[in-house]
Length: 166
Image (cartoon, rainbow, N blue to C red; front, side):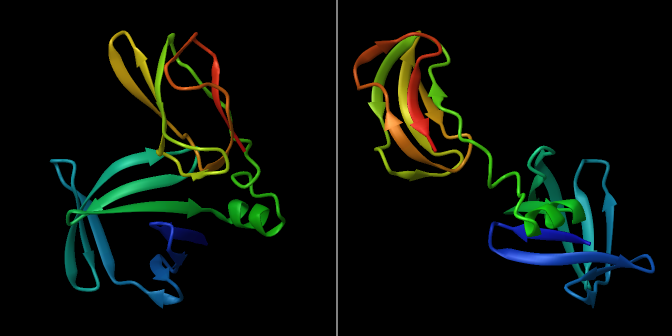
């Protein structure tokens, strides 16, 4: 059994019985085929859909799909992931947030967060000017801002810790 979570809200249990797909204990009437142009043609319960895989992250087991123009971020949990989660050993929950470091020498133009603020993966944290370009450094995972180690309009060297996350 797989557990699929779509857009961090809707969860589905998916199994295969006698070669047929079963979603939440209901048999699904479906068929899918890859098209020469890279699209996926899906026929599900009598309706036709066009899908494309936009991104896959094997480490986090996330797949981003675009179905008929709508984007769906799907997280996949295999039986071992479910077992570890039930045992309280969910590796995602125990990952330590790494501090945000300057990837190159530059000038801190603007700090976009404050201590205690909750941030999500992809949120902008700080704007660093380097080589006459503004670079927005983003959160690589959801975390809470523990401390800000620099102030605006200060020069930093490569590797300088800018923001600590927890």
